[in-house]
Length: 223
Length: 363
Image (cartoon, chains in turn cyan, blue):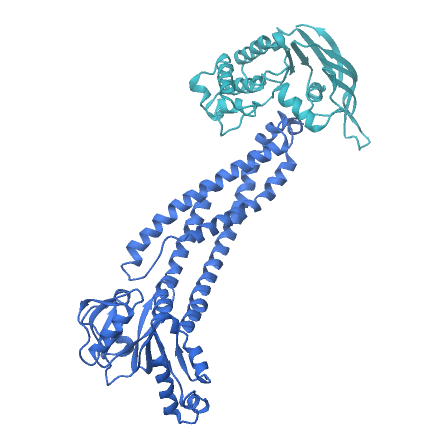
């Protein structure tokens, strides 16, 4: 699905002390499976995810997604891919505070049809948010419920790739494992990339890529 | 934001209704009454220097008589009488107007005058003796007068007693003179609207009107209405609207900028999950239209009942003529709101340009 060649990302390009977030590596990712990208803070794992998801444009190298060179396409095309083919779970849930959990899921939907709304309800129910919770605003939900609502939001368009950046960072252990279980199930027929510094949540990962100082230090292992 | 818009709408509308009481109250006196009755008095100097048609070489009295005869001969002119006048005062929320009414020497003349003007005696009786007057209902109410009271005691002393109340569309009053008190004497002409331009008639007659001459005809009243009432009030209403709306616009601008700042994360999310900027702009605009639409509707719903309440509880008991339905003003307020909406494009467009994706926020 993704073929990455010589991927580099340099911050502070205009200054003398350039900061290499990614130091020119190659990587290939499959169509499905749960892949963990792990590494300490500043290792470049989030930057890698942002480059793959088109949120960031790398300084150098190529990111080929299903035959499309993501570094060469226009902003509009990038937005289109993000909207229709990618799903995002961010470290913070980024739920819109004045909307209900259900409406928050619908925010990402490409259409507002009743069938999509039903689908959103189904996702939320599968994630443990019942009829009572889906009508509540984020301030009335727990951190775990908010994060699960944000996972439903990421899933609503049936994305081919789901990017999850530290999806369990604000959750307790039980909720963290629940979220990971959901992501594992979801990865059966698509690619789920989980960026984390917490190795313990990647027990079910199909592949773990370890990053260190902007480079891949190990690839392919499991916990 | 909605409440600021709604309250501003209601306040401006109510101020408009209150100020317009002057226009509505003066209308019958300034626009309707002079369609039926006119007054004039020409100075001796004017008459002497003018070559009045039919009395070119006559003295002032002969010239004046020629003018009066010519007037009486005109079709649509019913009566031309040299008579004393009094002024009936009408007080609006802002400003007042005093309009002359004639003092005839017989009850029959008064009857004919009331018939000509379409006024009807609704209470009391017609004047029968010197110093008796019948006053327009609206003036009675406005000046808190009753039958048996002295008319405008402050101005005319205890010289004119109210014996009846008359009702008409044009606030008509009439009476009989008091020989101890004279407020001025004029020719009082009862005519139809087509003869309302006395100035034009005098010009045709060869009269050279001077500063000392008095002509209260239809064009003079219309001019007064336009300049001293309609345009003046419109100017005041516009000035008040401008000041209020300026503050509303500034408040809205500040409130909206803060509103946008509180929603940075939301816009950031939209951009990150693939919304185009114009889609976010569309969402913002839709939201703004809803805010302004609701503000407009609530303002409208507040303004009309409030205006009705003020009319019923304050204006009507005070004898002040008022109208509460001004579609033109509502349209104007709608247009002002659109203008403010246009102004809010500035922060919207600035924030659209500044939308970041989540990666930049978290960097």
